[in-house]
Length: 247
Ligand code: G3P
Ligand code: MG
Image 1 (cartoon, rainbow, N blue to C red):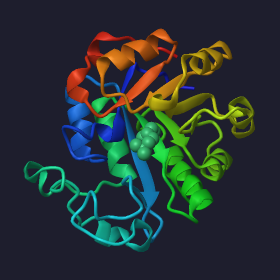
Image 2: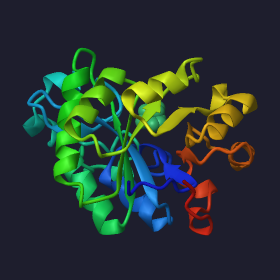
Image 3: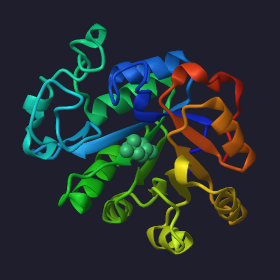
Image 4: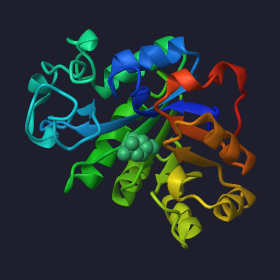
C-alpha cells in the first residue's frame, strides 16, 4: 500500500483560503507545503465523478438543483469559486480526473471521500473506485466514506486501493465494521473523540485521523493521544512542511 498519513491534510482541499473542493484549493495546499488533500466526490447525472460536498449546487456554485440530476456538461459550466470570494470567480467545478491530474503534478496524495447522493451509494462507490483504479499511477490514493455500501462497492472494484471508514462518533463495533469492509484506518470527528477511544483504536494498530481541526492546540492534543493525522480548513495555521509522515 502506497498511502502514508501526513500529519496535516487539507480538508475539502483547504476551504478557508480557497473555494472548497476546487483545483484552486489543491494548488494552494501544495504551495503551503501540504502533502495531502481530502476532497468529496459525487456522481453527475451521467455518472461522472465530480468534486462537491453537498447533494445540491446552491451553496458552493452559481447553479441550483441536485448534482445527481445535472449532467457533466452543465456542471462543467458552473462557477465553483465566486460564492467563496469574487476573487475566485470563474473557478470551475472540477472532475475527479482533473483533481487527480493536478495532485499528481504537484506531488500531493489524495484522500477521495466518496460522498454518494442518497440512493446512489453502491453505484458511486463502484464508479469512483473504477475511475481511480484506472488512474492509480496518477497520485497516491486513499478512499474514505461514511457510506458502508459505497466502501463495499469500492472494494469490489479496486480491492487493493486502501480504504478508511469515516464516522462521526466512533461506534462500539468500530473494529468489526473495519474488518468487514477491510478498511485499514478509521476517520472520525474530533469534536466527539474521547482520549480513551483514541487510545483503544491506536492500541489496536489502526491509524486514526480526525476532522475538522482548525486550532493548532487541538491538533497538538490529538497527536499526543496517538492520532495520525488531522483534516484542516485552516491551511494558514499549520506548518505541514515541518512534520514527517506517520503511518
Ligand atoms: O473526510 C473527512 C471530512 O471531510 C468528513 O466530513 O462533511 O466535511 O465531508 P465532510
Ligand atoms: Mg469530506
